[in-house]
Length: 437
Ligand code: S3P
Image (cartoon, rainbow, N blue to C red; front, side):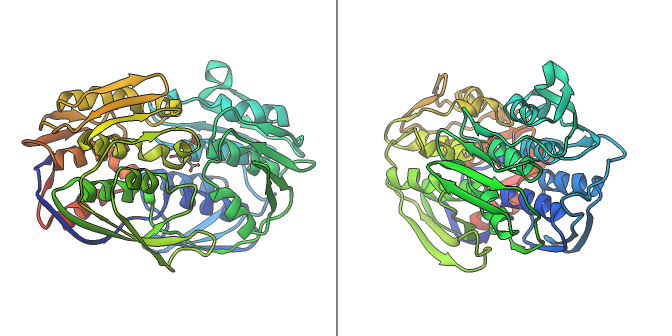
């Protein structure tokens, strides 16, 4: 599948984005582990999160789809999961794989996990090593550091205090989930705060959890089903907001976007670049997760520097941010972001390679990039490399390019934002993007 993108002069309107991917995964997993019923509204019905639903069903949770994005999960309880009858395929979803590894560390049976070609390349040692220290048996490729992996848990697991060398919510969450089965409190520290959706939702499901001096500590105990209202995904909204900031005549509002402070780095960066971000609190999110209506208006952008603790707050938004940086005046630097190399693709290399085809040079650094603007993107034939966020960033670049852009290999957009093209075209008031086989 490919997208043909025509440049536009105007974007206007109010749209919604689908439910937050990180929060959806967690609602399904905690629902499966809880006693009683969990009702989820606004669940992200995209490939990644449907992998998590399929996984909890394979493990014995009773899931009913009651309507679009509305799921009822009858939890199996902390000790009620069953050995799955087949390999669990996590597809492209790192969150499914890593958080499940944490859950499976506490199950007294073997489970086999695999994923697509991208996920099978991604590092798993960051979770399998601490889970091994807690007592889980993990075997698999590359000394149990790459999928496919087989996991057999132990009860109880040994409580550990883990210091993660990377700011990763997936690592933190995996260890906290395993901690539900530990023989004492488990704690995780990290170099900078990563997204805290697990902490908020675990507390909501009745877990005893505390955060002090940068470390999160969980006391093992039962979870109880809850109602979860998933706000819109700021990582999906980011593409529309950046488009709103760079298309000549634009005013774009995205409603009910999750604005958990651990996720709003893209808004901080865009404001530092001179964009005016309007944020009006909206009640429709879960009370554990704040939501807002966000509006971005076209304006001249200037370069910025992104590093340190801001990086985990916008790590998934770097492809979108890079598009804004290319059209901004001055030299934008992104550093402390080596994690970009182990996402759905190596996003530092991918941005340099694909932007070059559009006549924009991105200087690669080991832990980031340097982009000198302002540049005009030139319409070209580019490719996502199977990475949903690259596909959407290149499409947004195409909106402000000189001439037509063809983005190849765009089926991956369905992993997080299946209605991306329709949503963008609604703002463009016509078919700025057409989908071709
Ligand atoms: C996620 C955490 C981040 C992020 C990913 C989703 C999560 O990954 O990039 O898209 O839901 O916990 P890391 O934990 O590897 O930083």
